Structure formats: C-alpha cells, structure tokens
Image 1 (cartoon, rainbow, N blue to C red):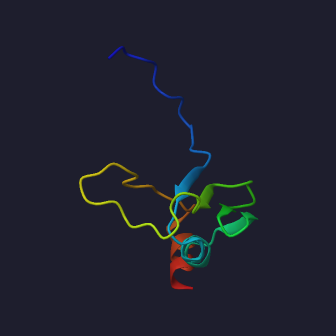
Image 2: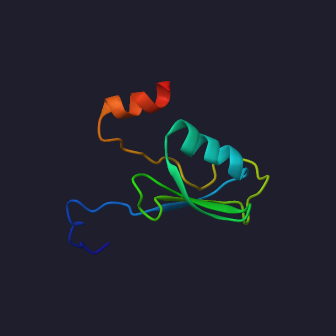
Length: 97
C-alpha cells in the first residue's frame, strides 16, 4: 500500500449515524444516561442529538433497522466508539444522576 501523509493532528469526528432497532430506547440511553440533547426529530424514525448545541453529533434512525436484532458474532459492523467528556468528573456526574 502506498504511504500517504498522516492525518492532521487535532482532526475530530464530526458526527456518526447509527441504525437502531428502537429509537426511544436509544434516546433514553444517549439523552437520559449520557446527557445528549435532541436537536431535531424526523417523525418516529430518526433523531439528531448533540453535545453543546452543535447541529448533531449522533444521528439515530430506524429507517432500515426498526425491530432489528444485533448482528451475529463474526460479522462486520461498528465494534467500538468513544464519547469523550472534558473531565472524568463530568462523566461521573452523568452516570450517577
């Protein structure tokens, strides 16, 4: 594989879209537990959530996944994502509230 220049330091992920089986359950986790704010809803099939008023950091939708099941072991898909709070104390505040 040809060598390409490294990504610029400070590059960040702007947003992620996730297919979910149950939009309300996903909102309960991301907004109720983690503290994201709903910025916009598209009927009962999608919601866009944010930390700090950005148009959206996470898009959640059920357009092709409503009622779906987790993928079986050994298949492709999102393995891990990280949500970075500014301090450990800020995260603990959310998870103990």
